[in-house]
Length: 322
Image (cartoon, rainbow, N blue to C red; front, side, top):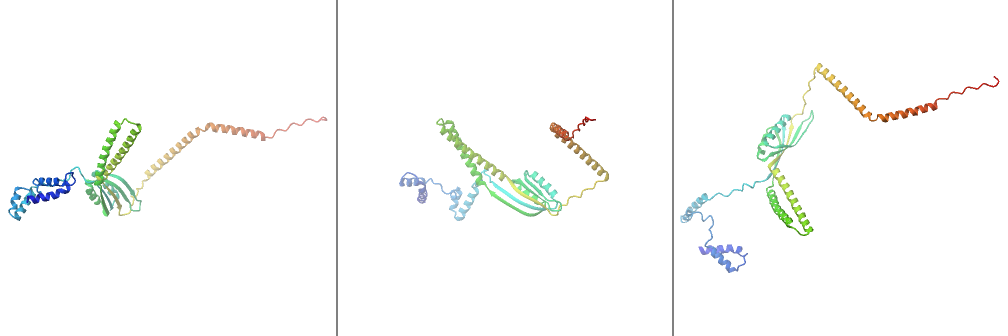
């Protein structure tokens, strides 16, 4: 039995040993020397009871193997530092009776969940159905409960949910950042110790700047993935069932109407006075120019009037015979 085990082990170890530099005979000797110390498979070497069970037949061996499995420790769990990064997106469309009350309830649910409203839009007019749109960012841990609470506000029209696993990309970018940081430290050390030509120093600085730019870009991607995976995105739309009718305005009594009319007239009078004052202030700058213009116009008109005015006739001289 030992010879057979040595033969099998030597056969299994030959491919791995073939990569060495020793001759074939030395590899065989190493395999034979290693064979007696080889550890049997875990399913065989479990306890003394398991070996005793082998002489008890198949049932004894089976029982011993079962006992060994119970005594064997449980497999190690996944490291706590490695967490799955998944981006969740959902679309929810509801029909509600009263949009105002439902919208207020949505705000309360968002505040209690620890999320925030990224976008909000309301459309509608009197006599038509109104609708309100939200883009909500909700923590992933409470996302399912939040969706159930929102669904209770009205009748479900449409619901869609998608997810994207970015775990591999997240940890790949993290590993690349670590490698680039090591490269950055190496270039920084070279730059500090460099005392050669200026051209060589400039080349190192350019390479260092490039590496730092790549690190910043990858760190930005890490922040984006962490934000997207920690907060789920819900696109929520609430639509009213009935057309919106604004409340009928209350007609004021006669004294109230008189008071409002008086107040309106006073307000308009004040506005007219303000406008006149502003006009006067605006024209004050132009007063010298207006005065010069009026003076020139007066002189021109006076000159024209003097030219147009007829001259008085000269008195006739007496004749000699008179």
